[in-house]
Image 1 (cartoon, rainbow, N blue to C red):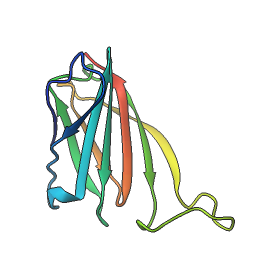
Image 2: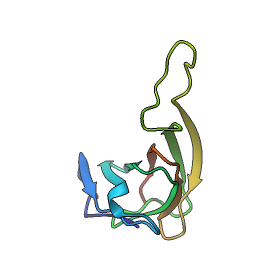
Image 3: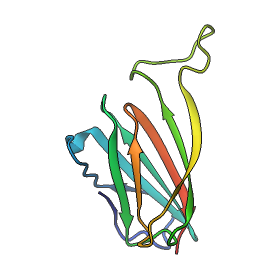
Image 4: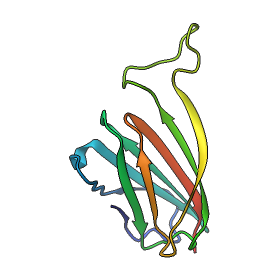
Length: 121
């Protein structure tokens, strides 16, 4: 579970403690930024395996809110784009839904950077 400290009303980044199921907590890192009624959470998975993470906070996302999730990942931490493979490392976007409690459960792909953004309650 990713827990945010008291961030409501503050602007800027806040480091977040991260705990996950089945992997060392040193394989994921997270931070959050709050501006007005918007919260963005950035989570990185430094592991060769996917991991599920629950994002929770005192500053809750609106219940059942639809959040934007951008994912940047590749098949290896050494992956890069080049002329023959210009999209080997490319972002993708999707949406996820906050729970009634204002939390979000996401699966982080291996070697990934994930950005979650949405409105606070």
